[in-house]
Each structure stands twice: as structure tokens, then as C-alpha cells.
Image (cartoon, rainbow, N blue to C red; front, side, top):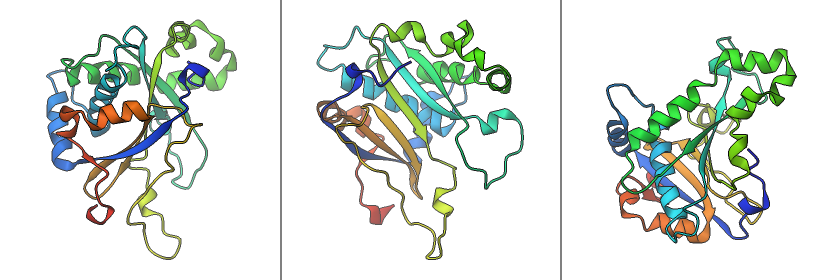
Length: 238
């Protein structure tokens, strides 16, 4: 899925920081749970965010006919079933793409979590070994189906999620102590919109969200969204 097409590049993007504290995360996990589904913190928070980002992007009703796709960047190390040194560097990533259909304000978060779990469940050690042992797999029908290539021709709106939680960045010490807070560079006109970076704090999880200015404004005024998140809280309180 090519998320770099001109149709997905906005001239005016901006980034906002939202904090989901432990209490809100627990509520989202409860809302996302069912007899068959027990979500992780990442799955609960990202699914909740995805719903409200879709609502923010489609509020003006001009994009309701375009397919909605969530792309989750997955670290394959844990899924490979082999030990990796903590000091090992380099990318071992694969995108998990899920098609989100008919998302509206009445959509249940547990339904989005279920779709996400199904997408993540396809990324197995066996899949990655296929890529490793036979590069031609990248041009196979199976890989094309995983990458939702049939959707790419329909000009989808793509939402990209990646998590820096539990990656140890807050433990890095260059001799002056561990960091009190982590941040990332904000959006610019070259930035792909609808991207989310989740980062851990002492209070919970921060979401750094980059969207078109008009869409981020819709998100900031979404009262249902703000029931669970704080907009740009003071760093001194984190």
C-alpha cells in the first residue's frame, strides 16, 4: 500500500500531543474486552484513536466513500521466536494493514480491536521466514493480499500507528541520568498526515498525532475523545 501518493500528502499538517493516563487506559481496555478478545494497552488505545481520527477526517462528509486503512508498524523480533541481543540494532519490521469498514460514532471499540487482532495474527514467524528464504514472496499473491494492494487503487485514507512503548528509550543514560520525558519532531508540510506515535510516560501513554490542521481541530473538539485524553498536558506533571 503506497501511503506516499500525492493524494495523501497535505500542505498544512500539525502535531498534537494527547495523554491517556492509567485510569483512561483501564477504561478503554474494559470497553474493548469481550469473551473472545482481551486487548493489550496498545490495541485498546490505538483502536480508540483510530475511530476518532476517522470521524475527524470525515466530519465534512467529503471523504466518506474512500476506504479507511490502518497500518500498524510491527516489530517482528518478538514474533520470530528467536532470542535477540538487547544491543542489536536495525529494523526488523513489517506493516500490518487492516481495512476498516463503516466506522461511525456508534462503532464499538471492541469491534475495531477484533479486526486489529486478526490483522496482527497474520504476521507470524512462518511469514517472515518466507520472506527471508525466498525474496520472490514479496511479489506473490499472498503478500499482495496482506498488503491490501487491491485497495490502493481506490485512494484510501491511511492511518499509521507505531509504538515506542517498552522499547527502553526512557532507560537510555549518556552519563547525565535517564530522560525525564521523550519527544518527537512535530509535523511539517512534508509529513504524511494521520500518523500516531505512542510513547510511554510515568502517567500512562502519550500519543503524538500528526494530521491536517482542519482534521486535528476536529479531533481536539471531539468531546467523546477528550473524555479519555488530555491535550498537551504540562510536562512537569508527567
